[in-house]
Length: 300
Image 1 (cartoon, rainbow, N blue to C red):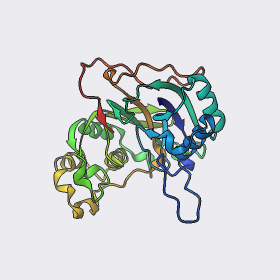
Image 2: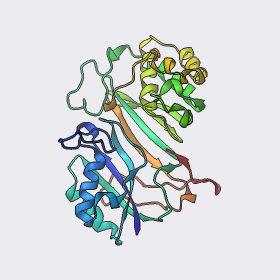
Image 3: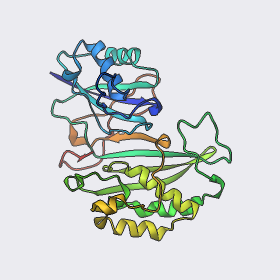
């Protein structure tokens, strides 16, 4: 058995997220990125979908994009990385592309990343650009957004906090720790807009979209930085069912502005740097960090 990792880029507009969705009885399965990748791998390797065991570093939601998604799969026979890369891109839809493929140790796990970076892109011209609507959120009254206030509030998220108020927590919320570490949160200029870029060791379900929604509320003046600080301080109290369903003071930001930019693995994961395919975007599968040997990353 041989294990492989690949870096994927995709436009998530047409898909019900990355992860497979159960098919209603008598109907076709909903289109997901994982389904299309598995279908291409089946044809490229001659294996069944169950044998491939496809997993991803991050299970992006419906409409969310990726420039640096990492997936792992198994093959019974050794595959050449370059031929497999070409075959995948020939067999996948044009809105999904593999930019790199590498064989990895069997005990390597794609879900144990040391950090992930997401970007949320905003289009801030008074009139929405129809050619950007798939990839950028156009907030209401963008000319009134106070970007300086948003940047100041974003800094409050940096550090280790209980993010219960900034996530969709299901009934099994007690099984997964809501304490996460945000390493950086920056507001960067874009032509005609701005980008909110956040890096962390891991994120809760819809955490990035909740944080973005809160920052947009700060920019619009309906919330202040003190409200963000209070929500972070009250994370533990938000784990009850009543608090989970209560209005937090912001709307969850829509999916289309969000993109998984990069997934990084620590050097002790036994995975080296992966060069992108010729003509690729420069996305790498693993960036070597200066870190001592230790646990194999933080589960996604």
